[in-house]
Amino acid sequence: MTVRFGILGAAGITPSALIAPAHANPDVRLTAVAARNRARAEEFAAEHGIEQVLDSYDDLLASPDVDAVYIPLPNSAHAEWTVRAARAGKHVLVEKPYASNAEEARRVVSEIAGLPVVVMEAFHYRHHPLIHRVEEILAAGTIGTVTSASAVFDVQVPDRSNIRYNWELAGGATMDLGCYSIHLLRTLLKAEPTVVSAQARRFEGGQIDEALTAQLEFPGGVTATASSSLLEDVQAQTARLVGTLGTIEFEGFVKPHGGNSLTVTVGDHSTTETVAPDVTSYGAQLSAFVAAVEEGGPVVIDAADSIATMEVIDACYRAAGLEPRRAVPWA
Image (tube, rainbow, N blue to C red; front, side, top):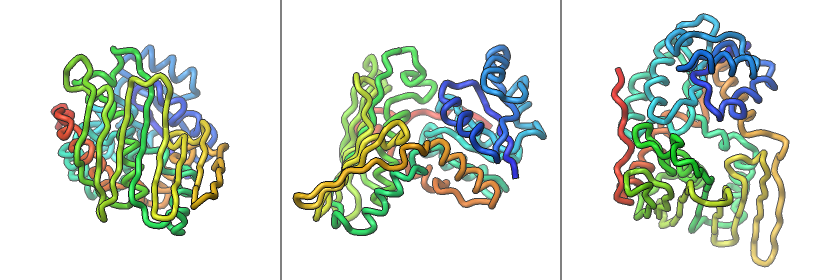
């Protein structure tokens, strides 16, 4: 089976997140793109080998040449177009975060319940062998019982006109970056946390977080810190798990194919390895999505997972004295 993808918008992330892995996957075709600016869509299609340009998002959803839709639109548009695509009978790979807030995420799940489509949030890192290797080490009990953990994702975004600084588009460091830190901790600890406290640096004194650090507590008294920043000069993608017998530290968890290292320390003995550097997380994600479409599901990142991530994000904002992002009205 070949899965024919349509793309909503001509976002900067699309070439690495979908187009490159699609061209490397014999079970995928890129059949259509639509953007607000048709000239931009035509340029994008010509540059990236997309078969046709359609006039509007609605035209793309109505196209018989599209089986699945990739949604890399601004955060505020994720929920609406996920639902519209699912209603049109299209499978959906939607960029994170799933929605503007937890309430909207729950609405999405309610709206698409029972529809014969696969919908998956694009936490691509989750599909990489690096994360599977960390899970194996934890399951083996190598570091004992986890007592604390931390995850950091910092990327400098100096352009203050970037959508990440836009309240109306549901921007913010936690929405764009911290969601990874939160999702990683939830994934590896296999539980839902309580947000104990959070500290944010506000963009121009408003509701957008340029940086945010949250202190979490997981069942069993496990403490954790999730942080993200748009301000740091050097990108950081680091995580650490401390157990009763040792520690796991790993770098490059968001994009392991860009370089990763995994160090396990037990007592005085440490081992360091690089895990599957030739496997891209985006390629692994696309393969998992295609398999779910071919087999009728399930997906690793399901609806309950997506809602739970948004609940923690909302709680982080409230703990930091900020408002959860507001949903744009849609029908």
